[in-house]
Amino acid sequence: MIDLPTGNTIAETAFLMGDPARANMLAALVGGAALTAGELAAHAGVIPQTASGHRARLTDGRLVAVERQGRHRYFRLASSEVARALDGLMALSGGAARPPSRPRGPRDAAMRLARSCYDHLAGRLGVAIADALVRRGLVHFDDGIGLVSDEGRRFLADLGIDSDALAGAERPLCRICLDWSERRLHLSGKLGAALLDRKLELGWLARVPKSRTLRISGAGERGFAETFRCEPVWRVVAPQPPLAFAFAEPGNHFCFSAEAEPQEALRSG
Image 1 (cartoon, rainbow, N blue to C red):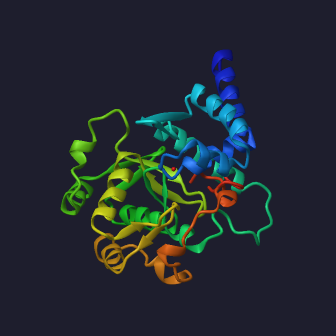
Image 2 (spheres, rainbow, N blue to C red):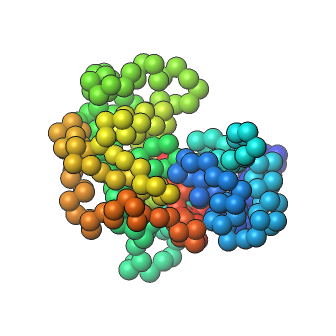
Image 3 (cartoon, one colour):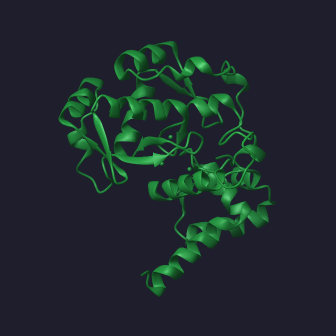
């Protein structure tokens, strides 16, 4: 049984996330980028004065942290645990009594294919990579975490990732998240973050400005097919838009799995 203090804490956190304006702010931060006060107000669809009160509640509730650089202040999610909770809420909300013809997750095909969820890869590509690692016996899923096999550690070392160095900190080496749009599992935790960083370093993925979308390069298509041996999910989506035209719309930043975009979000990637 949950004791009263714990129940009260859950209720307080749920209240903070449950307001539409604050939910939109949180969803805008799920991609891992830090945003200014004005940007958060735009995503929330409220005036700056109202946004200030919402930001204060989120920081007091330890859901959002403030980074100061000179005279400027930037806001980000306080931890990966907050991102994971948002991702779960978005997945839960996305599955609640909606017409089957309405697609889950982001409306944009490129974002559904590959996007960042806080600090790890999500979308169809993230799920395909997780599937490939499990199929090859490199990672095993067990009770919400991913267990890396000895063969998996050798695979990571060949890729340029030292899994032993990652394993020492408090954050689990490998977690699994329910993908917001795909409703299947992808990798998160320290390993998920390291894998995304490495794919960006290799030029297999590139960030689209002002968006959580990740663009797959030609080298990435070859790398994912030859190195990870994953399903070529990039072949069955509409062509990705040029980088110069890929803008995130403040009113469409909440699709609910922070892996979500503002008017829909509150999602683990």
